[in-house]
Image 1 (cartoon, rainbow, N blue to C red):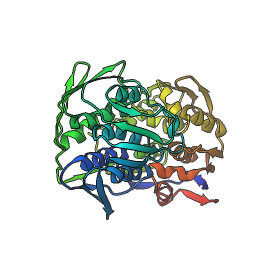
Image 2: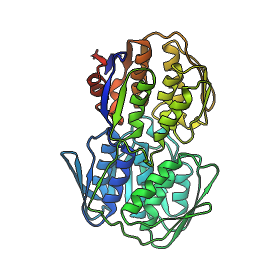
Image 3: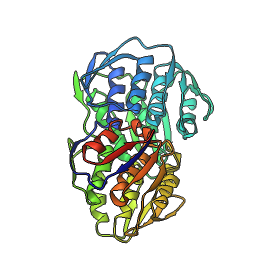
Image 4: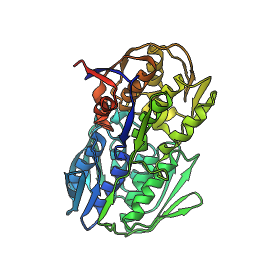
Length: 402
């Protein structure tokens, strides 16, 4: 799908979509419990649906009606064919869980997902009895059963590896430890996992260098739990407001564990100009913050973002290409971007490269430069299917070309 958008006349209030990061976690916990759980989730996305369908294939019956998931656990499968879509969270969370349940799986991967890193998680799973076929194979084939024990992970690769083990190891017979080495990145996502686990009665104990996980635990349903508003999705509207169009986002928790709530602090710092942004805790915000940098005084340096090269697109390369196409001055670094603000901009055609965050960031850029044509606009459905409707509802123009 190709659209031409113009956001110069955006204005009004918009309700935050539900956090897909939290929805993943709540669905997983509910599927592993003994009792049914109702999960409030006012909207769906392709990534949430990927986790839902994977859990249905192996662990639970799941229905969705009037904004509520009903998750009813059932006898787990011994073998399961699982389609992870393009969701990295789904794949990395479920691999250890399938292992702890002793499920032999064939996991189908789409888009760039087969190319996204699985080390060192894959090696740790194999070391503890759960065989996983070579990274890059599709489908990814698994066999065996994950055992309790001592796990060691680099914490600067992906917080999703840590979360996957935190979900799985309480199910193993015997106690386990996770030792983390290196600088911790995206720690807020692990905090979200710990919150969800606690809500479902699972005990995890922090240690000086990781976590201690008692084995033989049972997930217990809280009965009803709701998915909070998504700061990652709200960031696009927050940047629109920063760039001069009055947009307000409702339904967000200011004390949320979501790391992307930092968008408000970062934008406040950018107002002062010559800003340096450490992207390690907030990697998903980089594309839209690169757009904000075009409207910020002085120079913006984004660093510690090397992991973005392995997302749905190489997000450093695609963000830089987007800015250059619109007339921005940007230097691409190995692990970041240097962006000059305040320059003359113009419209243009952006290839979203199959990346939802590039598509939506390009739409935000139209606040500054007028008409922007976005090729591959349908990719927004991965996290925010109603984005184009919401853009139009706020007064932006959206012309569907094909």
